Length: 274
Length: 351
Image (cartoon, rainbow over all chains, first blue to last red; front, side):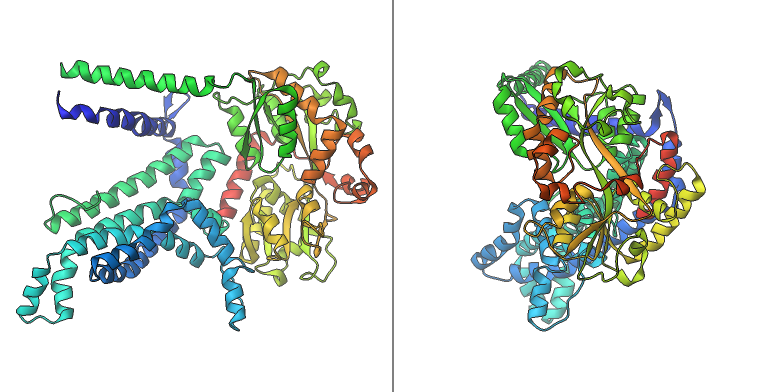
């Protein structure tokens, strides 16, 4: 008996819950009353509104990915330079919130950011004026970054902590100072972690709809919201399917680009978490 | 050899899967009533009482808006026995032949319903629906933030209240607000009028804090907005000094508004219409109708239940609006193909 037999449950699962649903999406996107149609594609392309929403989603996803990287890399770097036991305890703090449901954490932010919420209570008690945080683009970005930051930190931390110390020592021996060592040795070696982190943040960020719904109050409507609204409330399954396919293609392209970057880095095996 | 093993495993999995789903549904032998309703729209205790009295199980699903319910009912796979959509959706469901005629012999309590709620235009003779709740759409405002008397939708377009206005995330209701303000009918089929309403709402977006659903209630009770568009039933508890916020007040503007009815209907696909009829009858028992209506704050069409209530409820003008308020309101009608024009306008407003 070959060991590949053990993959069968996974293959069955994939077919039932990934391949078949995808075929359904394709079917509803291009078939109307039993005939091939491009009507839904036309609808999706025709309205400049939908393109604007897509652009907004891309921009928000890019900004949150950049913020995650800016915050996440230093954290991962500091963690990787700590004693293993201390780092393990500290990284628990990043993983701990992930044990709680993501929606609950997002709802919790509503309480924090509300006009009479925790943050404003804190501000006023310190003598600052009240701010308006809920239903703004900034709030959506904040909560997106909060939710996806661990997905940036963890792969980078994993890669950084695996870097052979002797590389760094060699760089120092050959006269490179700490800054030069970081940019010439550590950073290039951590690229697979960075790419993996970017993928893990960018894709959920561009497809999210719960965060923009709960925190954005329709002021920051994203592509996910649009798809959800088209299918659930307007009942245009065809249009919703075309919009989903557009998003899917975008995601596939970005994965492909990311993979290419990694291959160019000479890491043929692909990402650390992929 | 390898192939047969693969096939055998596939088969085993399939059998497990099928058996699993059977055993899940098979383990409770009780009759089950499948209900689809709005969130927060029935007293859970009423369901518990029904389950205990009839020895059945109630499976209760919720949805956020009328359109969602319509789509669920239009899909051929729906399994619901009982739903509570609004007037114009019922009109559409009847047109699409998706509803089952209700056998009134099984609902003797229908005699408790006030005649003014029967035989309405969307379901003449109540062949397909039995009234559940009714109410108006209006403005909920915070009297500490709004000094002027509120009697017009115009206040929602006043830049003074920038960042303090909540709109309702519902196509017909929000566009309806603008239509009424402009002096048009809620059921207009004039594209220019819808376009005018659309432009007004797009312009208004810069002063609107957010388009929300049920969460408007909490935001307003928490004093986080000056003005909001809400349904009367929600307003009843929002203005309650103990449960809500005593600074809040509700008004149905002079330009008129929407008068709505949510009725119980039985989809054609229901596998257990008799049980659904039993439940409708149970809901119209005076005691139960009173309990449910007071729990929700939504007005009951059940006059026997009203007769049991004390004065404070009957004098509450939000709960029991005077005739002149009802007279200036309009009922939604199904717009048929013209709904697409509303949807397009809504897309422009939201995205």
